Length: 299
Image (cartoon, rainbow, N blue to C red):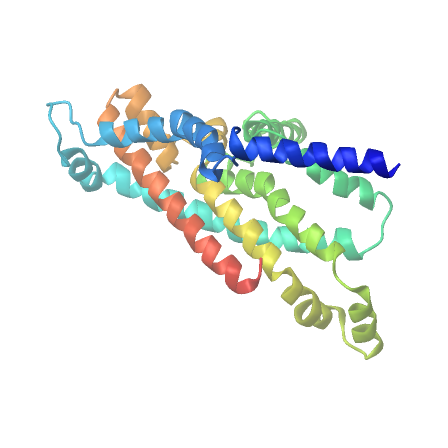
């Protein structure tokens, strides 16, 4: 047995010596080499098309390179109206989603009722729905020829029903709140599941009323989730296109709709690219603000 061990050790020593004299020891591949393939794919499928958009935005139809397309777009009334509409719709929808999502998440998480778990699972499924599907559902219910107006006209004999708001900015706002509220509820439910229920029981045993418990115990724990969900909804609402298009709100023009109008309907590609660059800049800026806020609240 000692002879076998000695032979093994000798063989190992010989191999090491041979490797040191004539062979090359194994070298670790630098970390940046592994990062090159994903960087190349990202550059090809995202950064390169984005660079083309930026390039087109400074190339007017007259030729050459100029910032004239930016001057023309910024001076147009259509752009200013689209920017204002985009901002107020996004902010209004975000506030509505935060309030409604927080209230619904509270009920699902802390109020026992039959089917609560099924509702929570349905929220996960709801997140996979396309936005235009929710808009179509609202059209079937509240549209000019929808169910609600049909019931009203059948009952009263009126020529048209009273529900004509879906093609207005308020209809777009309702559709966005309906669609994006689950994006706030999902992180809230995850945060509530980690909340120590002993705190709630102690607060309740000390005589605290439900609203005080929500304000002093639950809300501070929910702030990171609210910041994450609210910032996500804000960015998504700024870039929402399908809801505005499918509601048929003719008087509602957002930045994505203006890009569509300039590029497809007017074939003004430099102007469309300018609006797209502005939209991207706003989205990236909001994302940077979200990262700063999330660090401070501990998200």
